[in-house]
Image 1 (tube, chains in turn green, yellow):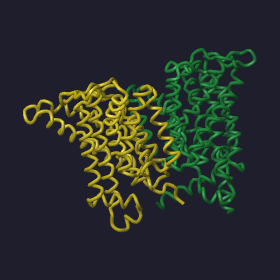
Image 2 (cartoon, rainbow over the protein chains, first blue to last red):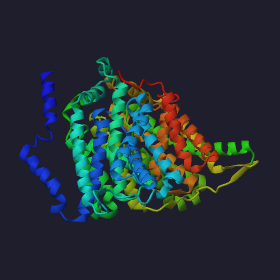
Image 3 (spheres, rainbow over the protein chains, first blue to last red):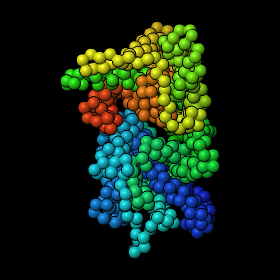
Length: 330
Length: 305
């Protein structure tokens, strides 16, 4: 038991394990990045990656902590984006208020999505979430009077901050996302080691044992979906506000697949790993841009190779050891 | 057209595409039954099958005219496509899934996604990104019953699919390999203890599943007259839905699931609108899972205690 708690505290310090001065340098680089690197293309890529980091952090709650494979996460992202888009276009809701509305509506939708999923187990949940994700995308695509159909919605306001309009340049969004990701990191790491976080992990490892110990599986799973949805809603709102437009093809199945890949590739349940995975998978396609048509081919090959050499992800979580053993027994 | 005629027409159309779904679904179900892996690259294998039959047509088109006419050519192309996809399935299993058999459950899912990226883009690079029109190998004839029209192609697809399914069913039931597959699906550990070569049987499962998908791809191209490297994704998704619908891991279930999904989709497209037919398919899926989580014919205990 003692050994276990040592392990827990070690993984807790994963981020700050980079000893403090290294962490300071890291944060300094992150904060000063748009000033050091003035290439707008680079900043734009990082902003895109930042939205994916938010998504990956949110999905990590569902997949990494609660251990539920969700293949329809892009639907929650879409709900967030369309909520802000519709509220802004019809009621001129400002961005900061929209952020809350988007997050709450995506969280609610996450809970609705979770209801059918709760009765199922394992891969079946994956399929239900996949189906629900597709339904959302098709509805957005076909409900023309409300969602604008395949063309989507245009003319969404960019955010403003005390009279300063964010406009179309990437730098303000960089800092906006930085603040949001920083906040998320703080909250999610607190959550991971809270009563709820430990309940998620207990359920993931052994549902029967966990429920015998008095954990309510229904509420615990619902809360994972709600929090995951909340984060996706935030990301969706930022995305819509930055683009100024939303259309259904930004929320394809492939987006869900990419976010799942980021979480698994980085290391399921490991916050630093998930961020790394999101960065790698968003920047890699850009680095491969020179190969033109071969780009996605190489991307696929890279994905296979990384998984073959690091099946537990780039930074695997210590507490996942139990799961490997179960797989080996089979 | 009277109401019944509309109904029969939609059922006939749905049946044809349902047969193709069923063929792909069989691959999902066989693999899932044995290794509990959602083979996400399976839809792409189906798409490769469609392109391979196009290639075979280009090669052997002249050859067959002299020897045996269009039906000979048809059989030849079918075998070529099935053989090609079978080899592809074998390779995918060997290099992308087998090294990860003891890895965490989600690792092979990611390599599967990687494989489907690779296949899609390889086909796009080799064959080009635009739609390819596929030739109708046999001259299309239409038979009318009142206002209902059925083509000889639809009849052909239905019969070839049924034939393959019956062969598969007999294979699983009566051959030693089939028996080994069922044993593996029941309990892999115990199966390996009684001397079943687990790796060989898993390879064979991939070969059979991929060959069926290849046959499906060939007939898909023939039926729709046009193929694209994107086609694998949606067809794969639908076929997977069909497999879950019938009870994943259950072979007759996949057949019934595929056909039912095709028919329901056809009816949905006929009575509502074709844009919504995909919503229809996924909605059915969710309803089925809600009320019969193990699928229509599924009896496997999904939850491990």
